[in-house]
Length: 258
Image 1 (cartoon, one colour):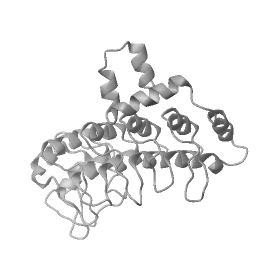
Image 2 (image 1 turned 90 degrees about the vertical axis):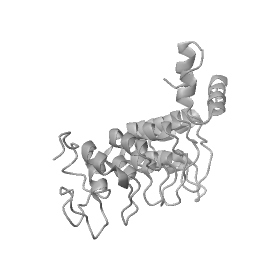
Image 3 (image 1 turned 90 degrees about the horizontal axis):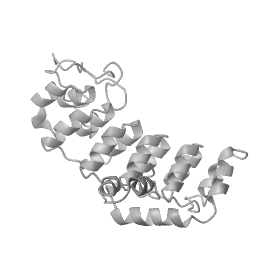
Image 4 (image 1 turned 135 degrees about the vertical axis):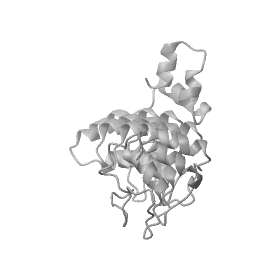
């Protein structure tokens, strides 16, 4: 029995889809022959660090659903497990786009996992055909903090799912906070999706969101244009790079949207 305890979600998280495998996950000697769920996946999804250490040689093993231990750690939100897996050679790049760790973390709102993966070099603009980018997934699931962390890390604010931008997803969900965040980071309010609709046209008639878009339709201020230009120069890991600049704190805070 692990002396580090179990994740508080043990009773709820039995798999990425919320379903328990065909055989018991609590027995480390058992392996689910139906779904190919291994003890390593069990330890990762429940945040069992000591068990994970014993099983670490299977660091890149996958289930028949292409769930890697890294993916499972993102399901549970365990940064400690993510760190240990990467220390022992876990791949940041999934063998199949059906189970992308960064997309799963963004979907579930695990900000620390998103930040950890971004800081270790994961492609934060990885665009999967059926999911879109991590930023799009975060906006689609109304995960404001994850969206902000991705943008701070240098994610492309206009890259979404096909012709659908993150701003389209935010407008569709009537999320004023997300819409404001995306526009502040330079989102294109005029871009059209596959149905030739702008984000504003996805807002229900009479919604206060419509007024918000009208307020944002004018040209950007010179200060905002300068901020966006400077941030683009830094590419990915913008937050870390800007923090290290020899500039007054007030100017750093402006560049960082603090």
